[in-house]
Image (cartoon, rainbow, N blue to C red; front, side, top):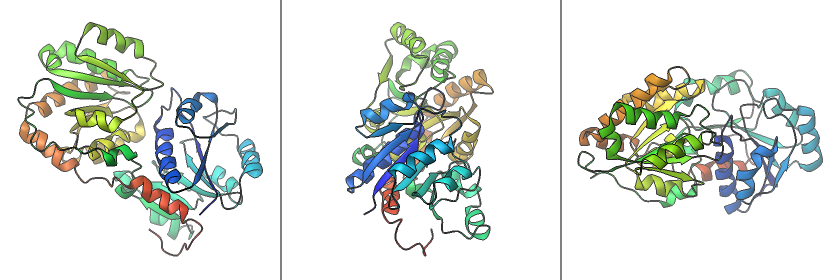
Length: 363
């Protein structure tokens, strides 16, 4: 066994909750294996989700956008031991930061965007688009390091609930099913009010289709537009708001189709065989657009940050295509199935536990 696994991450109304949520998932897998975990965050805005999950946490009182390496180095120098591991999940991380932590702890980095070289012990990129980047060149041919690469669908950190929730949609008659149960979700922040735009466009463009759907709207912890969505819900009985959802897998299993921003949610939809219409709210999500939109496994509708009205209209157009055709619906169910390993969090946890062991066999 190793010592403590430290998680360095943040969440707020700008970056939403995705980084913290996958760290919480990995933490739960580690605790089940008998490991101690501890969270370190920049400021108090990141604390609530972690405290509610029951984990110990230390708040540095620093800027989440630009990490103060000297402050962080002092913390880990005082608290960490050589058999501890630091798991970093933030777009604020730099190669300089990881290098500064070397000597105090072993390091693992979630690397979604291949931005730079991190001198870490483990690099994790579970995204289906990881093959667009030459990890072998960066970590072996250029640096000849002992970095272990955990790449692809075997390492998607899905919560335990997605392993436990059984679902089968193979015989769904979506053409006749009314109302259609639809999950509308955009992570923890939704600073562009994409969900409000989707609802408003559905009402404006096709009131009949809007009425055929029961809209299950998930408002995350940092959603600044809750009051706008609440007004729509108060005026339309088929718009139901869900806050503080503890079992997303169960909610997904009860829905027929999903409209979501590109994020880890797309992998959860795959696990639940849930046909999905999706859009982007950040430049780096274009990689998801290319992979999940390929062969119309999911239907990509555009970038809300660049063309909000066109994207919202495209969502309604593509949604009508999904709920209007059994053939298309079942194709999307079939292609989503088996795209990810539901044991991904356990697979990462096992690699972390073995980090002190033999580093000769690279992935």
